[in-house]
Image (cartoon, helix red, strand yellow):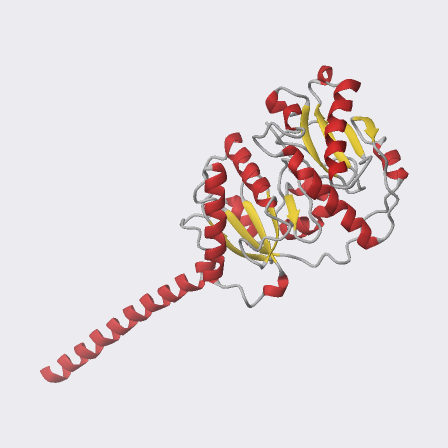
Length: 339
């Protein structure tokens, strides 16, 4: 009787031991499965959860600070801008990268859908390490938060035809001041993409962060009136003046800025480059303008591999639209926020 009881106790002990080991192994497996989304923190902020809920979400690396202040947003924006200057091909980081974006809180990296099945945890880690090293060298940001998303197919997204009517349309914009240059007439879809891409690439050196070259001396951070600069959906450049300091804006200043831009573009083989000058108010609560602007609505800055643009506005981000907004970036006005 005693032997039978001891035998039952041994069986019970072994069953409990096996059960505990099974729980441990299940927990370990779960940790491995979720490693792609490991940010090095047990808590994921609401800002990151917005991306996680997007079906195009792949992974998240780095850490977003609990308090996101203006200094942080400026550093992220500058880091993003420096990353875009590595484009339109990002092969130095990884051939799978199609575009780089930002919402002034995190860096958003979109990977080409052709690489599905080829992206794993180790490859994400390698790409992230290169981006982190780059941003730490450029802006001193370590453990920079990076969200990885799948890019969407943008082949069927049309651009409007370009021509004199683009300038006429600009005159109806709130804050419009004047125009300079001549709008080219372009109706072919591929040529419109090439023109917009050319505007972006040629304009980037004119407004590098922390630089006193190009039109940078005219930015508000140097006491000037300019607070934004970018490429518009309608095929021209936009120079935005700070709305609160209209006394700094006059024909002479506009002519000086345009001369700098025009001379730079002439070196690239483009003469009489079209530019619209406009008053712009950039705030953290900036609402979408009368004309639909998908990036203003989603707070996304975009640099795209195939149809590149550059820019930055600060607005509230809507969850679930990240990937669509990145792809639609070519269809909207984007500017560099400088403060």
